[in-house]
Length: 537
Image 1 (cartoon, helix red, strand yellow):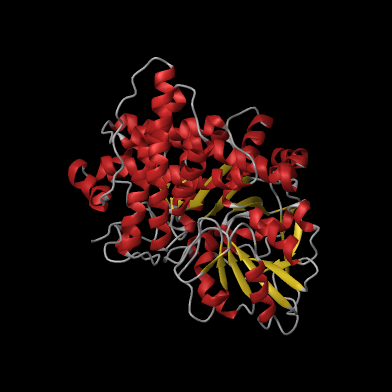
Image 2 (cartoon, rainbow, N blue to C red):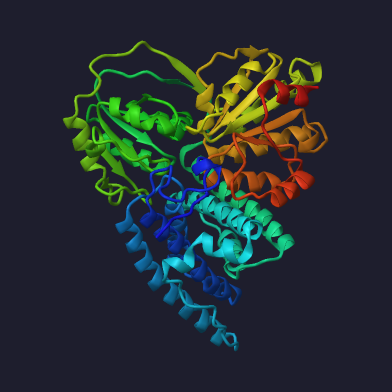
């Protein structure tokens, strides 16, 4: 079956992958993922109806989050795992339908027939909807679906740490029920896209609360970024619970634990800093992992996206967790990292210490707000002229040097906030400080866009204005569905004048882009010099 996928920024020719995914996804996995998304939509219709009658089932909620998460870019490439998910989806669909029927009967109502599960992959393709509805309507539907996927990923992480909210699930199923009905009203589609931003805000709030209540608020921390002699395990991805469990199980075993990619911010959490063998950060962003993992002399644990096809040189040393999967790669079961630990002990490890080099992280909202008075005074005195939020996803596609060049060109009387793996374009550069306030403030992971928003809202409150009137410019880099969810959250909050790059999503057609431009003044990036001139005048 020919595939079609345009859910990420690297999509083939900027229009869609049709033979094989640039990410490494093959047509079979692409078809199974599309089928699983349709299956979750079908489940959501009955779960939404049941919740309207006051009935719910945590098993349905948990499955919906994990199934959606598994379909994100660079998470799971294992066809066998998707067949298992689809089998579970069929059973969950029946449970949701029975739950709905029982709830309706109890309420004295007749439960509507909301359709059977989509079982034919040909009926789940995006091409079929494009042929029936056209690019714009299909693109708006997919914009919602991709945002929901991103929100589900964040909610999954929060759920692992015990944080959930019925209001989140109610809105999740309401949005999926809407899109499952194949809507064609443009205004309703745009409205639900913004509701998806609201959904993701709830997810990020949950995850922020989960992380900070479990591990404490991040604090400014110097992190080593060069290797130390000894046995080694590398942890990549986003799931802090996985890292914590690995740290517990490796304590006293003579293994240094290194973070990679979006795990860098974990070094700033007080509860994790107590583990002395949380040694350093290794490497850079996700798209460099094949060469960096090849050179890493230990075991590698992938907790979430972004997984790339493992090379044969290190494939036997890779272990995946949760929704992450790749055929032939060992899967960690129930946070039991014994196989990964054994692989690390069997590997040579680093033969000697590299020269010590450190960077400073940990400028989440709690830290920044604790010195808000100094920041506000610096703005009022003119010492700080402008704030730039330069962050988001990194990637391999040409054009991302823009973010390095932009950061370097930002005037020295301006402060740069950054987050997510986009920071790797410039986070090892020395930007100095303004009166003791570092010019580069690393806010954290991509979900810590919540922290950045809270910082902006606090500054707006201090100056008795709104975020759009602050001397603040947001320049986002996007790659996959969590970035879509964050963008929709910013739009839901009414934030305007966002610059987005390195290219616009293929599923955003010119008419949809016009709506975004007219309503929010969203714009594609151009060149660093032109954008700086437009921002600063």
